[in-house]
Image (cartoon, rainbow, N blue to C red; front, side, top):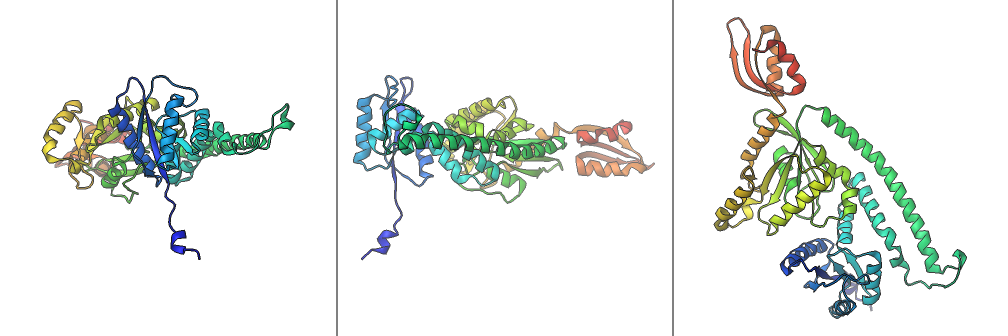
Length: 429
């Protein structure tokens, strides 16, 4: 009799993680990278074994490491009954095939892990297309992995190809067509996004982009500032699509903030390219709000990774407001020492907790200062017939002084957006 309870048990798959230590790297660096890889892999519901660190003397074209060490790794994977060997270092298609022949297991690298996570998280049409394109481009040189079990025939021309070889060529053609089709479809979707961006650029309202490492609280920050119902979840790459919301500040100023896809160490170049239209929100914004997780042990490396991606996008010269989030998670006994060090490195940083609200007023004040750079400060005397401009100053900007004279005129010291400045010019005093 079939045990239905036994049959219904979920399949548990296990992964052995492998980090390769180059001569100029330390074990501590590699462990840090492997800890992040483990977090990525766990997002795919895989159980992770204690990772291996393999010292590398010279890169081998066959397995990346020497064949003797490769045999050791394959044997360890077999002994612990792993289903996957996952490398933190990128493998070439031929190295991947060689490893799978050696270990008889599925062998992938960090890039494939990130691609799989992105595929699970993508929700909008643009994100889905971007991930599908990146996966197709990644798969094209690796097509043979799926057909190594088929027989091969040796001999001359194309008509003498074996079943596996013919299938490989067919799959390659299909993949190339798929890549071409996805590229064309993405062009149309990106045109629509460009139209939305042009509308924003015509707006006098300042526009900022929230950038930073994945899972540092960027979406939580936008939700807290805007009051909008934005998807927030404590997981890597919870947000793949840019979300823009209007934020009204205390001095009646407004700005637009866009939440962008999170960065990660060793973000595959194919994904940087695929998500360029999403990441370009950072390039086109007037300023950046760079969020860091103050409680993370990898704070310094996350800062370096974020700057590296911004540099690749050409956005590192933007006006950047650094924000340290998750203040509620740090040990208060270490807080004084930590803040002293960070204040020395980031003198204009703001420290907040989106969970408790601590520091949010200071951040709003700093954003008001940034927004005011787009507004013009005026001193004007408006006649009674132009009280509409008094109302506009109140709704469009910020009124600092307001004095009514006996003749019915009004003297204002106020800020207005550049698009409305010309309306006040003849009344300037």
